[in-house]
Structure formats: C-alpha cells, structure tokens
Amino acid sequence: MASLPLLGAAMPLDVLEAHRDWIIADQRDLELQDFITADVLNGDWMPLVHRARTLLDGYAGRLGIHGPFWGLSLANPDPDLRALVTRRMEQGLEICEAVGATQMVIHSPYSTWMHHNLDGLPNARQNVVDLVHATLDPIISRAEGANVTMVLENIEDKDPDARCDLARSFDSSAVKVSIDTGHAHYAHGSTGAPPVDYFVHRAGDLLEHIHIQDADGYADRHWAVGKGTVNWHAIFTAIAKLESEPRLIMEIRDKAGILPSAEYLSSLQLAR
Image 1 (tube, rainbow, N blue to C red):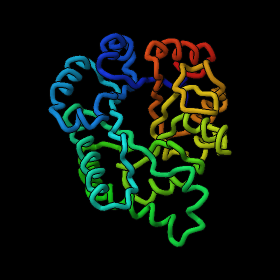
Image 2: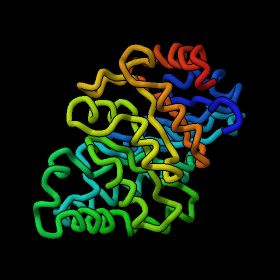
Image 3: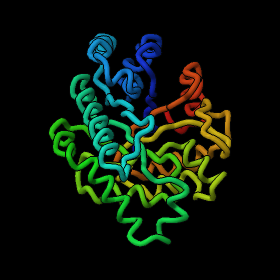
Image 4: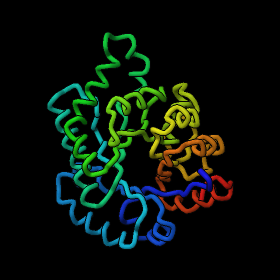
C-alpha cells in the first residue's frame, strides 16, 4: 500500500446517522450491523434497507453487512439445522442485493475444542470442510452473481491456517477470509494461538476484511483502539505487505469509541 490505509467502521443505522458525514467525506468502508438477529430476518427488513439507502445517498465506498451468526454453525452436522443455516446465509445475500453491499461477514466454524481434537478422530478435519460446503454450496452461485464476497471471520480459531484452507477449498471469489484482531488476541493470550500479526501473514491475500478492536488477550472486549494490549504496529506492518487491500472495519462495542480509535491510529501514523 503506497499510502496510509483508510479506516472504516461497523455500526447499526442509528449510529450511522451520527457518523454519516465522517463516512461519506472520505468514502470510508462501512459495515451495517442491523441484519443479524432472527427477529429482523423473520420480519420485514425492507424498511431497514430503505432507511440505509436514504442515509447512504452520495456514498460510493465499499459497503458490507455483518451476516447472521447467533446460534448458527456453518458446520452443523444436523441436516435440518444445517438447512436453517443455509437459509439464514441466503437471507443475508438477499439483504446484500437489496442494499447494494458487496461483502458479508460470516463466522468460522472452528472452535478451540476442534483444534485439540480434530486430528485425533478419523476424517474429522475433512468432515468440517464437507459440512461447511453442504451449508454454503447451495448459495455460492448466487453470491458470485451478486458480486458478494462472504468473508470467514475467526472466532475461537487457534490455527490461523484451517480457516484459510477452508476458504481456498471453495475456489470461488465469493469466499475469502476475515480477521478480527480482538478474537485473534484472545486466542493468543488465552489458548496459545500465534499473535495477531501472524494471522495476517498466514492469510495473505485471501484476507479481504479486518475487524479492528482492542482487547486484553483474555476476552472478546471490543474496546476502543488504544485501550488494550493489541500490537497495532505489528498488525499494520503486516497489512502493508498485502495486495488485497482488506476493508479495515473498526468494530467497537461502545460506538462513542469509533472516532477516538481512528484518531489514535492516525496519531501513530498507521492509518487515516
């Protein structure tokens, strides 16, 4: 990257109203967080889409959504439940099409338990891959046709490579990789995973999305940047080597921390 990377943010529409000028002034990447719950997905979500379109009048940046994830595993072994997960993923794609989003964050199926047990059980590692394909294969062509990339975000992942290998197995522009800095830092501090910048290096140009949040290495904090112990210099050094230009989405729990987080990274001359 020739210049400092541009920061974006994740937020619901209520917060976007207050941050709209900041987002649009530099056409920052934006991730909408309004479409993740069963209540929304089972109801009429078109009013949210219309509201988003109105708020984003004049927006020409890269738009994404956080896809459904509550209670959903992409590797669910129960075919009935797996059908529901596929349906939720397809609903997410429908929303992307309606609102004009080109990226949808979905959650990795890998857990800490899997890391310590998959290689001790016959075919268990391949079974996870096969189950995720059974979940996502029915909607891959739709995602490709809509120019939507589903990015697999690390949740409990201890192994930086398993999720990347899973994404590669689709051989599709519709499946790439995401890294959440706080999740990776939790895994590093609490489960012995590599440090966060190693996750970036290992993903390489499969990496098309990063959730930026600070944490303490013990829990999933989603603190404002600068409030925890994440090594931001190492992470942005790793990001600078990529050609994929991942969306840098600040995912802060207290949305009042979005602008201070951007100012903090700017003060370090790491991002703008």
